[in-house]
Image 1 (cartoon, rainbow, N blue to C red):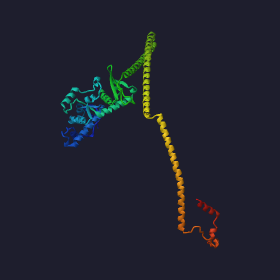
Image 2: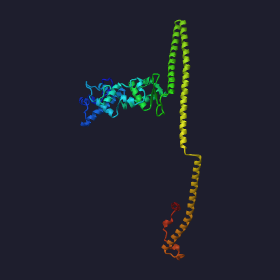
Image 3: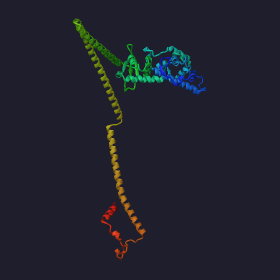
Image 4: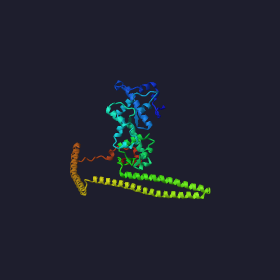
Length: 427
């Protein structure tokens, strides 16, 4: 069911929320020793862990603290007693991390940004660490590691699909506006940027008090630091944007002067109408000057873009040449010629061996076959037991008389049948 909780956040609560008996158990505190009843302890811990993560997603934030959780999950004037244990358990298994520790792991001057990255006074964290106690302060803020990684991926995806994708640098305020649909506030955005910086996908800098964010471009493994060249390009882009806005305003002002002159002329106020037209001319002249400046800036930006493209192509050529040189590192023309000569020699030697073998085998085979044939003839004569050079006697009787009489039906075989039989025999 969808319920509106005390934090004014609409969320879908689990079905157990309406079961008083079940919720009385879940709202009770954890046993000091988990081994007393492992199943109940784990069941309660899994319930609150999943609910904490879900509530953070609903609020589009990545941070939690005990005070907010107590207010959010208040039910029938009761507050869950085991949420501090839930936070400690999630911290031990790496699902949560203190916001101060999370920010301190990134080597950058985020504290100088002054955008409220750290929500709890560092003094409280210091005392908590020095005392070494496991007590969780009500206001102490924790970062949900799983959610901050998801939020960082959303911010990066949103940037790369926006009109700013062609620009490596953008102001923090522009980024706030761009990511307002995925980040609940500046603190959430800062946490996402910290994660992106940890992943080497973002670099941050301050330029004349303005917060600047540099994104890693497609094809790059990691983002480079913000250089003077980057700052110069950023300033040109900002000037281009400012001139475009001014030109738009001057255009609207010129149209307004024209409409006013037309209205005065209809009223017969020719002098005032001429004054409005002169004002329109002055506005158009300023617009022409700004238009020329804008074209100059765009020309410079086009040249910079072309130079960056040329640089990328040259780097690709250089990489290709290095790879090609490395591929032929141990290969020379003399070596290739020597290798081909050796291959030809081996082929010639193989041909000679083949010819020798085939020639020798033919003479030997003929002699062996003649001997084998002679042996077979001798064996045949022995088996028949017929003396050599003795021919059988010629019969004295007429051969035709000794043949049996042929039936009359056999004599009537047609010529066609005989031809068919001959064909079968031939097959």
